[in-house]
Length: 289
Length: 288
Image 1: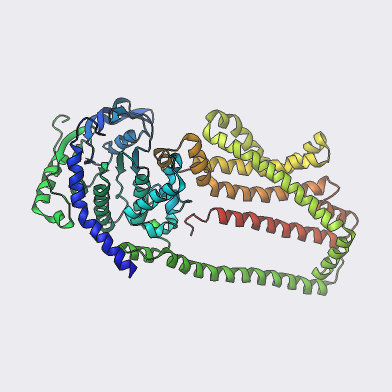
Image 2: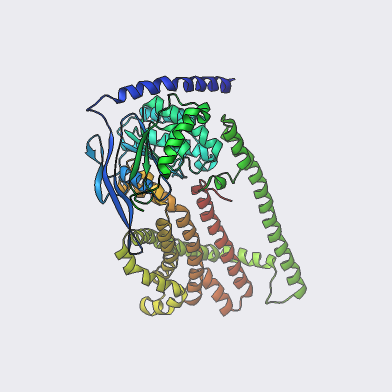
């Protein structure tokens, strides 16, 4: 019986994310105090076998507060490098990433990250993984527990609090990783192809869950993917990367209504959007040829 | 890790709750695997004991048939043990050997952790130490005993030194390798979550490397025990190795057999203890 009740509650939550989502997007146009993340002419060069390899070449775009920005491009276009720079894990060779006007220099819990291969700590239970960042905040024990519980509830893992990562399926691992990033209460959530290792069905379900969580929490997201459908379905804004020149090729605002619902994936608007994004992605690079 | 290997263990049950999106309790899965694991484990232990009993039985019968002073029966060896125990020699020899191996093993391991970490973290430390570690790894610690006896005599210190070295080398390699092999993404994840350098070390690198380190310790204990017994055979006036060499000297054949049996039994018991600690500490690993 309780399982049924919980499911109903969860379904109700799902219904409401659209309204919350809308409230968040309205709030985002608030102006000067915003926590926008700006990439300003960011460049990165790697040394590989003595040869210089340009990974990112003068990339500029903004992940506006409260919006879902996706960096879309083929593998090797430098999109993951961009995210590592934004996280502060890798330093840029030129330009800068700023969050709320302050330049990013080192990793910080204000920029949460979700990795493609989960990067859960296998020796910690789900709840200890989720609570990992709370050790670094001066929180009382009870508040810490409440924060962990809230994050677990957001991703629907509350009944798996004591499980070990090895006992979870891929989709549940990624939910756990998302909860872990959320528990640190980041200003921006960086997601590096988070659903890339999942099967198609699980991926769709998690995309829907992510939209719900993002709506509920009013998150700013910078998402990286090579999947055009995923980019359109999730985003408010898409930044298309040029695979060869390693820079921004086009910026597209996604003209699809909120809330996003599964049926939209086959709607005319979606297909039209896909046509636009796809042709931007595959536009021949006249400049280079 | 690909989702396909993720689902390797108990894959069917997992994909079931993924599909229903209404997860099955983890406890159910845990109980299932425990029942299966417990049964196979029980059978395994039974087979071990059966094999051991059969070996002793064959030995007893063949020794009775051969009837030679050079090949005593297990029963006779147990009686010899009783005699030696009553004299108080048996327990003191066991105690001395155990103490030596404990001191050597723990000091070797204690030293190997900072050295292995230093080698993994700093190229200067690695450059300075690795050639020497590789060199001494190529030399069996036993081969050092003559030099050590010349330099330090046959007291306790030279034994601790040789045993310590036997334990230190494999553990150092294991610590170094374990720390070097830690998944970069785990370190990145911890840093993004706010962990400092020290915190990453304590909360991520050490636990992530612990399976490797514990395996190194198990090998180290085996090495330390083998080296100890050999050192006692050559240069000592107490311990199980000494017991065996005295048996040879005074042609007390059952005593030699007894010493060998005790060395084997104690070696297995100590290895089991480290193994159980290892299993307990690394139960989070996704094992086959």
